[in-house]
Length: 623
Image (cartoon, rainbow, N blue to C red):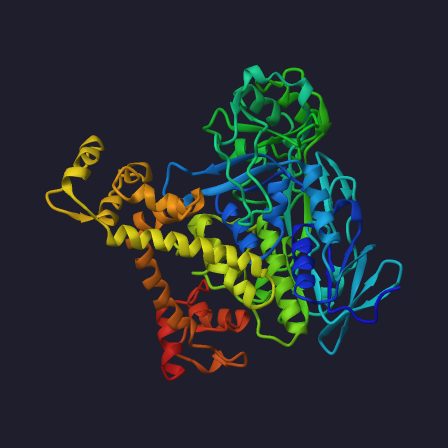
């Protein structure tokens, strides 16, 4: 029924599992993707969108590494927006509104077109572990499937419990059963488990809404896209989203159901996402605010189903309905289904290595919400890295780990492994110390060569990146080498309220002024001719402008990153005995013993480990 032994078995086909399976298979490993329902591959369980603040950078990183999320997002998008355009390029974040059904379909078709990848539909109820090594999985029908490595990407399905008011039902997602057995086996193997909560809003019939009472939210006038490849194109038409607000009347209706809310009556004991709270949590925590934004998002090109972003709730369905009817534009609303909360098992990620392999069981990897994260993008990036590292381990090659200065993915995984999380972890730009380096526009520069070297990114992708880099750097050099006389420049400078030039200077220095744009520079002699001659596209022009405008900041962050790398290079042996360092604080010894950092740099980021503790550690290590 199955081949003798797979190189990689992936359990779960959400965003983490799909990226993991694609990465392992594309690196030449025989891979099996096992899921409870093949019709729900890469299902968008919550809002039908990809990207956003920091999350958009992650999708571009996944694409630069050779993952599929960016490509699928482009081909299933119904709207594109570049967020934070009023801020500097380090903060720009792409986001697409997706067609939910197209997204899942395109993911499945890409996976089915991937060599070395097999599929099987059934629940995995247990692991086969021999001598502290994962060697396969066991299904609910009693089948044993052998593998050299196993990646668990169970999402919210591990002992999932759905709450709607005072009603409870087992399930990993609305209409789908929970997964039983894996948590219990992992706990018996010595793993620590916990519970987390997330939620989702009601879905409503768009035909019952009055959009004239809402504020239209169109996409960008000139939309971009996620993938660096030419395989996808920017949208030629888009669907609008809409914005409306709650009101004191809405809040009063919601409060009527608080005593029946599982959040407030103690039925839900686990912690939900801090930065995506339920509507009842919002009006309870922010009692001084008399309204909250709601974004009404289409679920696809043709469907009338709408997602009510900002109204996540576990209140009874009659309370949800009564409250929503009081929202402007929702007076005649019809429900497709109510919102709900879901509790599920997760495993504190301090039990993992940076490769996402568990410390307790060799060849066993965790990725996605099982690690305490929230969001499709965070899950997909972990799946990609777990798939890469499982394939490399089976192939007996060096592990692949991204540093904090190399990718948001590196920040995400290091935060999880080093600090752990007691609430659903979400990525923000503020979590990255080097966000000027980790921009959405240069993810290919940062990561594609690394991915090509391990056998994942294609040569076509590498060549495209190199051409973009060569052309933009050639333009930067042209600007650095070409002089501009005051007579030509001052007319533009005065118009832009910039100090006039008194003597000739390089175009680069003039362009570096904050109020001078690419359009201004194109008026200077020779510039437009260079652009036309070298056939520079919009992406290459933007890259040039960023390299000019932010050269000082970029150089400063590179220097800071280099300093960090020196500590990163001081490795700590896995068997290092911290109990011998009596001059180190007790808390630091306990934390270091638990996390087992691989470098002094990682040790310095552990909560409870002070600079003085690091100094003691360096002295003890003879540094």
